[in-house]
Image (cartoon, rainbow over all chains, first blue to last red):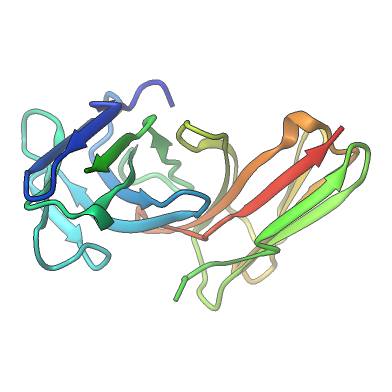
Amino acid sequence: NAGVMQNPRHLVRRRGQEARLRCSPMKGHSHVYWYRQLPEEGLKFMVYLQKENIIDESGMPKERFSAEFPKEGPSILRIQQVVRGDSAAYFCASSAQGQLGTEAFFGQGTRLTVV
Amino acid sequence: TQLLEQSPQFLSIQEGENLTVYCNSSSVFSSLQWYRQEPGEGPVLLVTVVTGGEVKKLKRLTFQFGDARKDSSLHITAAQPGDTGLYLCAGENNNDMRFGAGTRLTVKP
């Protein structure tokens, strides 16, 4: 899982600020998933993207949250006007395309704290 | 509601005991993965199963995929404190992966 890079590892934001979380997938992977995890809980699906396309964003709040995966560069999860309830660990995973039993590899996460 | 239901949610046992955790769904999956997550880290892939009825062994861990590819189990023999962690299952269809909420295992020395 060391191949998926997330930054920053820790992010502190004041209420009302914007948070930008970055995820560089493993080389050759064109699928990216974002998950949110609250302390002592499992992973909650947020959004699934392929290059330049959002495939499924059913797990993402309709307001303040957006995600992109441009042709070049990392995937970005953007949270506008953060609130204390946004504090969580945000994990990104990537997988290769078109393989049976595709496996996802995770980054180490970004821990967002809203103060 | 979770697409994948994992049980039990929490499990605390003594070193040397055996245990089984479950991952159930009403959906059929092309493949199913098991991950382990330790505090402060991302989930790490343990195994992928793709064929109904498939059994895979990884040292003291035995993974089984249900015949109908809707459920899976993870059995640990002679658990050790190093097995402590959050065990997550994930079902995959067409590269779309969804996770269960996990089973949090604590193995006491």
